[in-house]
Amino acid sequence: MSDSRTRLQQVLQDLGLDLGAFEGQDWSIRAPRDGVVLAGVKSHSAEQAQAALAQAHQAWLGWRGVPAPVRGELVRRFGELLRRHKAALGELVSLEAGKIAAEGQGEVQEMIDICDFALGLSRQLHGLTIASERPGHRMMETWHPMGVVGIISAFNFPVAVWSWNAALALVCGNAIVWKPSEKTPLTAIACQQLLRQAMEAFNADQPGTVPEGLSQLLIGGRELGEALAASPLVPVLSATGSTRMGRQVAVKVAERFGRAILELGGNNAMIVTPTADLELAARAITFAAVGTAGQRCTTLRRLIVHASVADALLARLAQIYQSIAIGDPLQQGTLVGPLIDRAAFDAMQRALEQARAEGGQVLGGERVRADLGQDAWYVRPALVQMPGQSAVVQRETFAPILYVLRYGGDTGAAIALQNAVPQGLSSAIFTQSLADAERFMSAAGSDCGIANVNIGTSGAEIGGAFGGEKETGGGRESGSDAWKGYMRRATNTINYSGALPLAQGVRFDV
Image 1 (cartoon, one colour):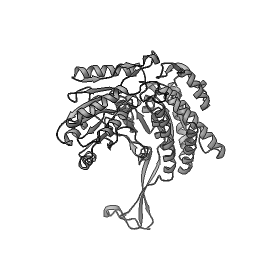
Image 2: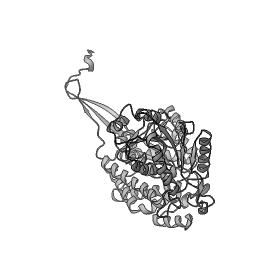
Image 3: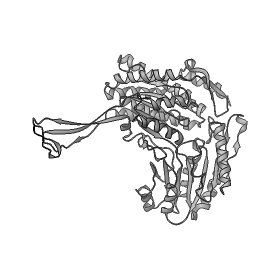
């Protein structure tokens, strides 16, 4: 296979992207597929970060007055550029994050989809008209832009999650400042350049509509995330990452009474009942557990299967796990690409060692395809039968490890087991029982933000709000009414009566 640096040069050419302004020695960006160093980039300084925030704030002061449907037109133009460059940007995602080609392309498609969603939304940022108890009065709700929206994204979805926030924030009238993962800055640079192209083309048609500095990019490490969390110029901060990171961000934002949208860890479970279609379940389990090499926040990490069907299902899964195609993510037919880096591999091995110490039986988990690069970390997905929901099972390990737990009795026991972890992002049940399905989705069922029936835990569509509960942070991004997280609500009362009656019948005559 051609080395990743050679592939990168072609992708940069296709995108028309010049890295010159970002080149430096602060961060070495290594391709997970073969371990080759793709580029070196420099960090923004604390002073540059503050200047970017100030410029974004000034841009917001102008952008908030642009009509929302006009703001939607900017996002539409950005979506058109994404369509034009989907193949190249998708390959860049694969090169930098290690995703298989289909997932890299799929991530760019998510960006296109959210642009379409945001465009339609730009004509529907509506409030309510509310009946007043006072004659000759009308009450209503109006929604207004918040200011600068800070976005901190993770390596595993290096562009899609940013776009969920950016597209909605822009149509809602906000400016955006983005700190991507230090492991995946190249995709961020590419997206920023494409968005700038959309802005320049828009201003060529409608001069002065898009203020300079409306979208800012900050390359660097933890200190830049802390600057976003602490800045009073950032009324909304959307952060995706670990629960540990979220705890720190949440405290900083709360100290200044800002608003945090947190998408944090997931320890997602699927329940397989005695009535389940086992072949359908096996296919869903495989994608959910090993897709993106187990590095999704919605990755399936716990399989809770009824004892009566456990042996049959596990035999089928063992067969799949032993034969699944692992290798170069850009090669056709590959289903499992590499882990992001050596640290991810080491964390996986520590978790498997702990699982064995806690009574687990481990199938798989070893390093494979070392021929693809000394610094490329490919693993066979691990299937681990556990005697109970021990400490290692209750902790999220960002790797393709699927812990298998058996249950007996009714579905209530399985639901209780599923909910008995600190995280609450995604969940699923496989069943042909209407009663079990409804129970799972009821108030007494799954405590997760996502609860699916007869599909896996991964692969959410942008039309539904995405997020979870408990240590997952409680935030919601993408579809439905998630736009409200990027706006402030005002309740307005208009008196057209000529009198001044007070609410609740209060009399105050002067």
